[in-house]
Amino acid sequence: MGVSALFASAVSGLSRRLPDLGVTVFDSGLGLRSESHQVDDADPIPLRFVGFRTGRRYYRSENIEFMKIAAKLGGLGKILSSGVREVIESDVILDVSGGDSFTDMYPDDRIDNIAGSKEFVLDEGRPLLLLPQTYGPFDESLDRASRIVRRSAACFARDERSFENLKSMLGAEFDPDRHRCGVDMAFGLAVRDPGDRIAADIRSVLDDSSTPTIGLNLSGLLGNTPGVDKSRYGFRADYRQTLIRLLSKILADTEAHVVLVPHVMSPEGAGESDLQTCRWLRSEFDEEFSSRIKISPTHLDQCEVKWVISRMDWFCGTRMHATIASLSTDVATATISYSDKAIGVFETCGQGEEVFDPRVLEEEAIVEGLMDSYRRRHEISKGLTERIRMVKERAKSQMDEIAAIVTDLGGR
Image 1 (cartoon, rainbow, N blue to C red):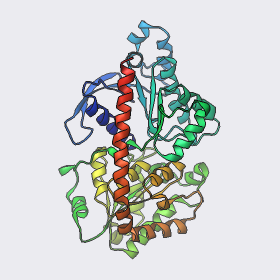
Image 2: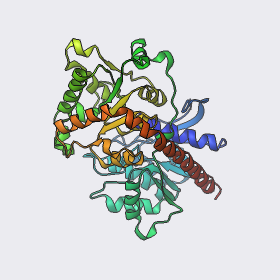
Image 3: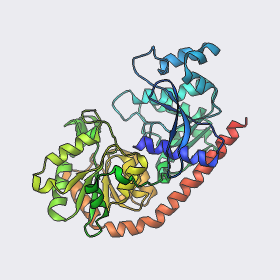
Image 4: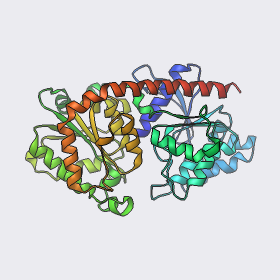
Protein backbone atom coordinates (compact mmCIF):
# COMPACT_ATOMS: atom_id res chain seq x y z
CA MET A 1 0.00 0.00 0.00
CA GLY A 2 2.94 2.37 0.46
CA VAL A 3 3.91 2.06 -3.19
CA SER A 4 0.24 2.37 -4.19
CA ALA A 5 -0.13 5.50 -2.04
CA LEU A 6 2.85 7.12 -3.72
CA PHE A 7 1.57 6.13 -7.18
CA ALA A 8 -1.88 7.57 -6.45
CA SER A 9 -0.51 10.77 -4.86
CA ALA A 10 1.86 11.46 -7.76
CA VAL A 11 -0.66 10.70 -10.51
CA SER A 12 -3.46 12.63 -8.81
CA GLY A 13 -1.25 15.60 -7.94
CA LEU A 14 0.18 15.99 -11.44
CA SER A 15 -2.89 15.08 -13.48
CA ARG A 16 -5.15 17.49 -11.58
CA ARG A 17 -2.62 20.30 -12.12
CA LEU A 18 -1.74 19.39 -15.71
CA PRO A 19 -4.95 18.00 -17.26
CA ASP A 20 -3.34 17.50 -20.69
CA LEU A 21 -0.50 15.44 -19.22
CA GLY A 22 -0.04 11.98 -20.70
CA VAL A 23 1.09 9.54 -17.99
CA THR A 24 2.69 6.12 -18.46
CA VAL A 25 3.15 4.10 -15.28
CA PHE A 26 5.96 1.53 -15.23
CA ASP A 27 4.85 -1.51 -13.26
CA SER A 28 5.45 -5.24 -12.90
CA GLY A 29 2.78 -6.27 -15.41
CA LEU A 30 3.17 -7.49 -18.98
CA GLY A 31 3.08 -5.37 -22.10
CA LEU A 32 1.38 -2.03 -22.70
CA ARG A 33 -2.10 -1.54 -21.21
CA SER A 34 -4.66 1.27 -20.93
CA GLU A 35 -6.66 1.45 -17.71
CA SER A 36 -8.55 3.99 -15.63
CA HIS A 37 -7.69 4.27 -11.95
CA GLN A 38 -9.46 6.01 -9.10
CA VAL A 39 -6.43 7.56 -7.44
CA ASP A 40 -8.27 9.99 -5.17
CA ASP A 41 -11.85 10.92 -4.28
CA ALA A 42 -12.63 12.33 -7.75
CA ASP A 43 -13.27 10.67 -11.11
CA PRO A 44 -10.90 7.93 -12.33
CA ILE A 45 -7.91 8.98 -14.45
CA PRO A 46 -7.03 7.21 -17.73
CA LEU A 47 -3.45 5.92 -17.67
CA ARG A 48 -1.07 3.80 -19.70
CA PHE A 49 0.77 1.00 -17.93
CA VAL A 50 3.84 -0.77 -19.26
CA GLY A 51 5.86 -3.64 -17.84
CA PHE A 52 9.30 -2.77 -16.47
CA ARG A 53 10.61 -5.79 -14.60
CA THR A 54 13.69 -7.46 -13.20
CA GLY A 55 14.27 -11.19 -12.81
CA ARG A 56 15.85 -14.06 -14.70
CA ARG A 57 13.42 -14.17 -17.62
CA TYR A 58 15.73 -12.04 -19.71
CA TYR A 59 13.88 -12.95 -22.91
CA ARG A 60 10.78 -11.00 -21.88
CA SER A 61 10.48 -7.59 -23.51
CA GLU A 62 9.60 -6.13 -20.07
CA ASN A 63 12.86 -7.30 -18.51
CA ILE A 64 15.28 -4.44 -17.96
CA GLU A 65 18.21 -6.48 -19.29
CA PHE A 66 16.26 -7.12 -22.53
CA MET A 67 15.42 -3.43 -22.68
CA LYS A 68 19.06 -2.39 -22.33
CA ILE A 69 19.96 -4.50 -25.37
CA ALA A 70 16.90 -3.41 -27.36
CA ALA A 71 17.63 0.26 -26.69
CA LYS A 72 20.92 -0.08 -28.57
CA LEU A 73 19.00 -1.08 -31.72
CA GLY A 74 17.39 2.30 -32.27
CA GLY A 75 14.00 2.16 -33.98
CA LEU A 76 13.97 -1.62 -33.94
CA GLY A 77 14.38 -1.56 -30.16
CA LYS A 78 11.21 0.51 -29.81
CA ILE A 79 9.35 -2.11 -31.82
CA LEU A 80 10.75 -4.99 -29.78
CA SER A 81 9.95 -3.40 -26.40
CA SER A 82 7.09 -1.04 -25.59
CA GLY A 83 8.96 -0.14 -22.41
CA VAL A 84 11.95 1.07 -24.40
CA ARG A 85 9.61 3.12 -26.59
CA GLU A 86 7.89 4.70 -23.59
CA VAL A 87 11.22 5.61 -21.98
CA ILE A 88 12.76 7.08 -25.13
CA GLU A 89 9.63 9.04 -26.08
CA SER A 90 9.00 10.46 -22.59
CA ASP A 91 9.74 14.10 -21.85
CA VAL A 92 10.63 13.26 -18.25
CA ILE A 93 10.75 10.15 -16.07
CA LEU A 94 9.61 10.46 -12.44
CA ASP A 95 11.06 7.95 -9.98
CA VAL A 96 10.31 7.32 -6.30
CA SER A 97 12.48 4.20 -5.79
CA GLY A 98 9.60 1.90 -5.01
CA GLY A 99 8.81 3.88 -1.87
CA ASP A 100 11.97 3.92 0.24
CA SER A 101 14.48 1.54 -1.31
CA PHE A 102 17.13 3.94 -2.60
CA THR A 103 19.44 2.34 -0.06
CA ASP A 104 21.64 -0.73 0.22
CA MET A 105 20.48 -1.61 3.75
CA TYR A 106 18.37 -4.54 2.53
CA PRO A 107 20.17 -7.92 2.29
CA ASP A 108 19.11 -8.65 -1.31
CA ASP A 109 19.67 -7.28 -4.80
CA ARG A 110 17.14 -4.46 -4.36
CA ILE A 111 19.74 -1.72 -4.78
CA ASP A 112 20.78 -3.16 -8.16
CA ASN A 113 17.18 -3.04 -9.35
CA ILE A 114 16.46 0.42 -7.94
CA ALA A 115 19.71 1.98 -9.15
CA GLY A 116 19.73 0.03 -12.43
CA SER A 117 16.38 1.43 -13.58
CA LYS A 118 17.57 4.97 -12.93
CA GLU A 119 20.83 4.37 -14.78
CA PHE A 120 18.93 2.96 -17.77
CA VAL A 121 16.83 6.12 -18.04
CA LEU A 122 19.87 8.38 -17.70
CA ASP A 123 21.90 6.35 -20.20
CA GLU A 124 19.07 6.85 -22.72
CA GLY A 125 19.43 10.60 -22.29
CA ARG A 126 16.04 11.15 -20.65
CA PRO A 127 15.60 13.68 -17.83
CA LEU A 128 15.17 11.91 -14.50
CA LEU A 129 13.27 13.62 -11.67
CA LEU A 130 13.63 11.92 -8.30
CA LEU A 131 10.40 12.42 -6.38
CA PRO A 132 10.42 12.98 -2.58
CA GLN A 133 12.14 9.95 -1.08
CA THR A 134 14.78 8.79 1.39
CA TYR A 135 18.41 8.77 0.29
CA GLY A 136 20.43 6.13 2.11
CA PRO A 137 21.77 4.73 4.21
CA PHE A 138 24.46 3.62 1.77
CA ASP A 139 27.51 1.48 2.37
CA GLU A 140 29.23 0.08 -0.69
CA SER A 141 26.70 1.72 -3.08
CA LEU A 142 27.36 5.32 -2.04
CA ASP A 143 29.46 6.26 -5.07
CA ARG A 144 26.96 4.70 -7.44
CA ALA A 145 24.02 6.48 -5.83
CA SER A 146 25.93 9.78 -5.79
CA ARG A 147 26.54 9.57 -9.52
CA ILE A 148 22.82 9.03 -10.10
CA VAL A 149 21.68 12.09 -8.12
CA ARG A 150 24.31 14.26 -9.80
CA ARG A 151 23.05 13.21 -13.24
CA SER A 152 19.37 13.71 -12.37
CA ALA A 153 17.44 16.77 -13.55
CA ALA A 154 16.05 17.39 -10.05
CA CYS A 155 15.91 15.60 -6.69
CA PHE A 156 13.46 15.97 -3.80
CA ALA A 157 14.09 14.57 -0.31
CA ARG A 158 11.16 13.80 1.97
CA ASP A 159 12.67 14.96 5.28
CA GLU A 160 15.51 17.07 6.64
CA ARG A 161 17.76 14.13 7.56
CA SER A 162 17.49 12.70 4.07
CA PHE A 163 18.03 16.14 2.57
CA GLU A 164 21.33 16.38 4.42
CA ASN A 165 22.30 12.99 2.97
CA LEU A 166 21.36 14.22 -0.49
CA LYS A 167 23.46 17.36 -0.12
CA SER A 168 26.42 15.27 1.03
CA MET A 169 26.05 13.01 -2.02
CA LEU A 170 25.93 15.99 -4.35
CA GLY A 171 28.88 17.83 -2.82
CA ALA A 172 29.84 20.89 -4.86
CA GLU A 173 27.08 20.08 -7.38
CA PHE A 174 24.30 20.89 -4.90
CA ASP A 175 21.92 23.41 -6.48
CA PRO A 176 18.99 24.69 -4.36
CA ASP A 177 16.93 25.24 -7.52
CA ARG A 178 17.21 21.56 -8.46
CA HIS A 179 17.65 19.89 -5.08
CA ARG A 180 14.90 20.51 -2.56
CA CYS A 181 13.56 19.30 0.76
CA GLY A 182 9.92 18.27 0.80
CA VAL A 183 7.68 15.74 2.50
CA ASP A 184 6.42 12.28 1.61
CA MET A 185 3.80 12.56 -1.13
CA ALA A 186 1.44 10.22 0.73
CA PHE A 187 0.65 13.06 3.16
CA GLY A 188 -1.50 14.36 0.31
CA LEU A 189 -3.26 11.06 -0.37
CA ALA A 190 -7.06 11.28 -0.36
CA VAL A 191 -9.21 9.41 2.18
CA ARG A 192 -12.16 7.43 0.81
CA ASP A 193 -14.83 5.46 2.71
CA PRO A 194 -14.91 1.88 1.33
CA GLY A 195 -18.65 1.59 1.94
CA ASP A 196 -19.89 -2.00 1.88
CA ARG A 197 -16.43 -3.23 0.88
CA ILE A 198 -15.68 -3.46 4.60
CA ALA A 199 -17.43 -6.00 6.83
CA ALA A 200 -20.18 -4.81 9.16
CA ASP A 201 -18.43 -6.09 12.30
CA ILE A 202 -15.28 -4.07 11.55
CA ARG A 203 -17.29 -0.97 10.65
CA SER A 204 -19.18 -1.22 13.93
CA VAL A 205 -15.87 -1.23 15.81
CA LEU A 206 -14.60 1.76 13.83
CA ASP A 207 -17.88 3.64 14.46
CA ASP A 208 -17.96 2.90 18.21
CA SER A 209 -17.12 6.22 19.88
CA SER A 210 -17.68 4.85 23.37
CA THR A 211 -14.65 2.52 23.33
CA PRO A 212 -11.12 3.36 22.09
CA THR A 213 -9.92 1.62 18.95
CA ILE A 214 -6.26 0.72 18.58
CA GLY A 215 -4.80 -0.03 15.17
CA LEU A 216 -1.69 -2.16 14.79
CA ASN A 217 0.22 -2.63 11.54
CA LEU A 218 2.57 -5.62 11.59
CA SER A 219 5.35 -6.26 9.10
CA GLY A 220 5.38 -9.63 7.38
CA LEU A 221 8.96 -8.93 6.34
CA LEU A 222 9.93 -9.27 10.00
CA GLY A 223 7.14 -11.38 11.43
CA ASN A 224 6.81 -14.31 9.04
CA THR A 225 10.28 -15.76 9.56
CA PRO A 226 11.37 -16.15 13.20
CA GLY A 227 14.91 -14.88 13.75
CA VAL A 228 15.18 -12.78 10.58
CA ASP A 229 14.82 -9.63 12.68
CA LYS A 230 18.08 -10.31 14.53
CA SER A 231 20.07 -12.12 11.83
CA ARG A 232 19.41 -9.66 8.99
CA TYR A 233 18.42 -6.39 10.62
CA GLY A 234 20.39 -6.37 13.84
CA PHE A 235 17.48 -6.28 16.29
CA ARG A 236 18.12 -6.50 20.01
CA ALA A 237 14.40 -7.02 20.64
CA ASP A 238 12.63 -10.08 19.28
CA TYR A 239 9.97 -8.68 16.94
CA ARG A 240 7.45 -11.47 17.45
CA GLN A 241 7.81 -11.41 21.22
CA THR A 242 7.46 -7.63 21.21
CA LEU A 243 4.14 -7.94 19.35
CA ILE A 244 2.86 -10.62 21.73
CA ARG A 245 3.84 -8.62 24.80
CA LEU A 246 2.34 -5.41 23.40
CA LEU A 247 -0.99 -6.98 22.49
CA SER A 248 -1.11 -8.83 25.82
CA LYS A 249 -0.66 -5.54 27.62
CA ILE A 250 -3.33 -3.83 25.54
CA LEU A 251 -5.87 -6.61 26.13
CA ALA A 252 -5.13 -6.82 29.85
CA ASP A 253 -4.86 -3.12 30.71
CA THR A 254 -7.44 -1.51 28.40
CA GLU A 255 -10.95 -2.08 27.10
CA ALA A 256 -9.90 -1.02 23.60
CA HIS A 257 -10.91 -2.70 20.38
CA VAL A 258 -7.87 -3.85 18.38
CA VAL A 259 -7.77 -3.81 14.57
CA LEU A 260 -4.76 -5.39 12.87
CA VAL A 261 -4.14 -3.54 9.60
CA PRO A 262 -2.14 -5.27 6.83
CA HIS A 263 -0.33 -2.80 4.58
CA VAL A 264 1.52 -5.21 2.30
CA MET A 265 -1.36 -7.14 0.78
CA SER A 266 0.51 -10.20 -0.46
CA PRO A 267 -1.53 -13.39 0.02
CA GLU A 268 -0.80 -15.52 3.06
CA GLY A 269 2.26 -17.65 2.36
CA ALA A 270 4.08 -14.94 0.42
CA GLY A 271 7.32 -13.77 1.99
CA GLU A 272 6.24 -10.29 3.07
CA SER A 273 2.53 -10.93 3.69
CA ASP A 274 1.34 -8.72 6.55
CA LEU A 275 -1.88 -10.77 6.64
CA GLN A 276 0.07 -13.88 7.59
CA THR A 277 1.68 -12.09 10.54
CA CYS A 278 -1.71 -10.68 11.60
CA ARG A 279 -3.30 -14.12 11.61
CA TRP A 280 -0.35 -15.60 13.48
CA LEU A 281 -0.56 -12.94 16.20
CA ARG A 282 -4.30 -13.35 16.70
CA SER A 283 -3.83 -17.13 16.95
CA GLU A 284 -1.50 -16.63 19.91
CA PHE A 285 -4.43 -15.52 22.09
CA ASP A 286 -7.24 -17.54 23.61
CA GLU A 287 -10.71 -17.16 22.14
CA GLU A 288 -11.70 -14.93 25.08
CA PHE A 289 -9.22 -12.30 23.93
CA SER A 290 -9.08 -13.03 20.21
CA SER A 291 -12.75 -11.99 19.88
CA ARG A 292 -11.57 -8.43 20.56
CA ILE A 293 -9.09 -8.60 17.69
CA LYS A 294 -10.22 -7.82 14.15
CA ILE A 295 -8.17 -7.95 10.93
CA SER A 296 -8.76 -5.29 8.30
CA PRO A 297 -9.53 -6.67 4.80
CA THR A 298 -6.81 -6.91 2.16
CA HIS A 299 -8.96 -6.03 -0.87
CA LEU A 300 -9.15 -2.29 -0.12
CA ASP A 301 -7.16 0.24 -2.12
CA GLN A 302 -4.72 2.78 -0.70
CA CYS A 303 -7.34 5.50 -0.10
CA GLU A 304 -9.71 3.07 1.60
CA VAL A 305 -7.00 1.66 3.86
CA LYS A 306 -6.17 5.22 4.84
CA TRP A 307 -9.83 5.70 5.77
CA VAL A 308 -9.68 2.62 8.03
CA ILE A 309 -6.53 3.90 9.73
CA SER A 310 -8.03 7.39 10.12
CA ARG A 311 -10.76 5.91 12.35
CA MET A 312 -8.30 4.78 15.03
CA ASP A 313 -7.81 6.50 18.38
CA TRP A 314 -4.18 5.39 18.47
CA PHE A 315 -2.09 3.62 15.88
CA CYS A 316 1.23 1.78 15.94
CA GLY A 317 2.81 0.62 12.70
CA THR A 318 5.99 -0.99 11.47
CA ARG A 319 5.39 -0.23 7.77
CA MET A 320 6.26 3.43 7.41
CA HIS A 321 3.49 4.34 4.98
CA ALA A 322 0.92 2.83 7.32
CA THR A 323 2.07 5.36 9.91
CA ILE A 324 2.00 8.19 7.35
CA ALA A 325 -1.67 7.33 6.77
CA SER A 326 -2.35 7.79 10.48
CA LEU A 327 -0.14 10.84 11.04
CA SER A 328 -1.70 12.63 8.08
CA THR A 329 -5.18 12.13 9.53
CA ASP A 330 -4.25 13.49 12.98
CA VAL A 331 -4.26 10.07 14.64
CA ALA A 332 -1.85 9.72 17.57
CA THR A 333 0.85 7.46 16.12
CA ALA A 334 3.88 5.47 17.20
CA THR A 335 6.17 3.20 15.23
CA ILE A 336 8.37 0.18 15.79
CA SER A 337 11.02 1.24 13.30
CA TYR A 338 14.26 -0.40 12.30
CA SER A 339 15.68 2.17 9.90
CA ASP A 340 16.42 5.89 9.91
CA LYS A 341 13.74 6.56 7.29
CA ALA A 342 11.00 6.66 9.94
CA ILE A 343 12.71 9.05 12.36
CA GLY A 344 13.07 11.66 9.63
CA VAL A 345 9.39 11.48 8.69
CA PHE A 346 8.23 11.48 12.33
CA GLU A 347 10.46 14.47 13.12
CA THR A 348 8.85 16.31 10.20
CA CYS A 349 5.57 15.90 12.11
CA GLY A 350 7.10 16.81 15.47
CA GLN A 351 6.76 13.20 16.64
CA GLY A 352 10.35 12.01 16.94
CA GLU A 353 9.73 10.75 20.49
CA GLU A 354 7.16 8.24 19.20
CA VAL A 355 9.77 6.20 17.29
CA PHE A 356 10.88 2.98 19.02
CA ASP A 357 13.90 1.28 17.47
CA PRO A 358 14.28 -2.47 18.18
CA ARG A 359 17.92 -2.27 17.10
CA VAL A 360 18.71 -0.40 20.31
CA LEU A 361 15.78 -1.19 22.65
CA GLU A 362 14.74 -4.42 24.35
CA GLU A 363 11.16 -5.74 24.22
CA GLU A 364 10.19 -4.38 27.63
CA ALA A 365 11.36 -0.86 26.85
CA ILE A 366 9.49 -0.85 23.53
CA VAL A 367 6.24 -2.10 25.06
CA GLU A 368 6.43 0.36 27.97
CA GLY A 369 7.12 3.21 25.57
CA LEU A 370 4.25 2.24 23.29
CA MET A 371 1.78 1.93 26.16
CA ASP A 372 2.86 5.35 27.40
CA SER A 373 2.25 6.69 23.90
CA TYR A 374 -1.25 5.19 23.97
CA ARG A 375 -1.99 6.83 27.32
CA ARG A 376 -0.87 10.19 25.90
CA ARG A 377 -2.94 9.79 22.73
CA HIS A 378 -5.20 12.80 23.31
CA GLU A 379 -2.24 15.09 23.97
CA ILE A 380 -0.40 13.72 20.93
CA SER A 381 -3.39 14.15 18.64
CA LYS A 382 -3.90 17.78 19.70
CA GLY A 383 -0.24 18.53 19.02
CA LEU A 384 -0.43 16.91 15.60
CA THR A 385 -3.19 19.05 14.15
CA GLU A 386 -1.26 22.24 13.43
CA ARG A 387 1.94 20.45 12.45
CA ILE A 388 0.11 18.20 9.99
CA ARG A 389 -1.63 21.22 8.49
CA MET A 390 1.80 22.65 7.67
CA VAL A 391 3.05 19.30 6.33
CA LYS A 392 0.04 19.04 4.02
CA GLU A 393 0.61 22.59 2.80
CA ARG A 394 4.19 21.60 1.98
CA ALA A 395 2.89 18.52 0.15
CA LYS A 396 0.73 20.79 -2.00
CA SER A 397 3.46 23.33 -2.70
CA GLN A 398 6.01 20.65 -3.54
CA MET A 399 3.58 19.13 -6.06
CA ASP A 400 3.24 22.60 -7.60
CA GLU A 401 7.04 22.69 -7.88
CA ILE A 402 7.18 19.21 -9.41
CA ALA A 403 4.46 20.11 -11.92
CA ALA A 404 6.43 23.24 -12.90
CA ILE A 405 9.59 21.20 -13.45
CA VAL A 406 7.66 18.66 -15.55
CA THR A 407 6.20 21.49 -17.64
CA ASP A 408 9.64 23.04 -18.11
CA LEU A 409 11.27 19.74 -19.11
CA GLY A 410 8.39 18.93 -21.45
CA GLY A 411 8.83 22.24 -23.26
CA ARG A 412 12.52 21.76 -24.00
